[in-house]
Length: 468
Image (cartoon, rainbow, N blue to C red):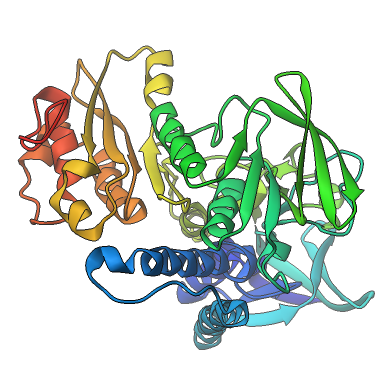
């Protein structure tokens, strides 16, 4: 039995970040990973999907080249090259993670970790126990997996999850996406951008249920105008084979309907990957498949901390990084907690969506008297220059205190622009303070400034009905 200070289970964002921080604080650290360093995010999620997203952005720009006076035409995709570039980006980043761990003197063990009892973790490989550890602390970070769709036909050939969608042998002509959440809408927009006919089937009354309604309403109008079909209040009944295609049978507002495509992409969420870890052997507290943690990321066992998707709070890589940092600080005797009030969400649909804080409806439901400021990108000079004028910035604030309750953006570079809203909320800034800060011109960031001004006054460059 080998003794270590910190045993990390899982090599995704929470796992490798925790291992690096633990090693840098002087802890003898071992990381156990059953599959790939970097986890789902780097290998099968955030990074490869955004590599494909960039390819469809370029395709979109080439189609519009002549609007900018550039001679040329869109002649389609070299799908093999698109995939190779994606793989090259992934290899570079995962190789960087491996190098960081080596330099930090973190030992990486390939295998599947299983708790065999109190402070006893075995590493299994090919059905055999290859190592056994007795750690002072465990950082439990196995990540998550795709949720399954419990309907007949969900195991048919051609029914895929987001991971398989990243490596299709060739682009299909049509695809049905079951699930209009973040993963579903990102994949739907990517494949639509590649020229695939896409239908989205979402059980809830709107796509992207947690997102501000004004934002999702606009996104739905835009993607439908581009040719996507979006069905809401639609519950899938079964998937069946129909010649060379698959058919998805669903009820839309109670009426039977059928959507068909060469592939059916199931994107109905993700669940913590806690199966097979032997958690019952140590009696750790669970909430269904998620491991219960407190604000310090400690579980019901004082020697086990669980950052990342495994705790089921926010299945986001950037939250996992921060949770791992907080967990290691507490392992090392510091007292640190995480503030989930200011967690950003970025959705790489087309156009992009980004948000932080409460939606307008959530703020009203919590009893706030709400004031909102909005500014459209069509009134922003840089957006006009870039030819991307769809969307707006919306700031939700408390009328009484002036506190910013939420920031919501749909439009060009939304994922980059949301940083100002995150910092403002973290520092408890008001819309007045954002508006009074001089923003560079011409930039998209001016839209954030003018939305802040619109909370309490009229923005400089827009009135309803036109531009001043």
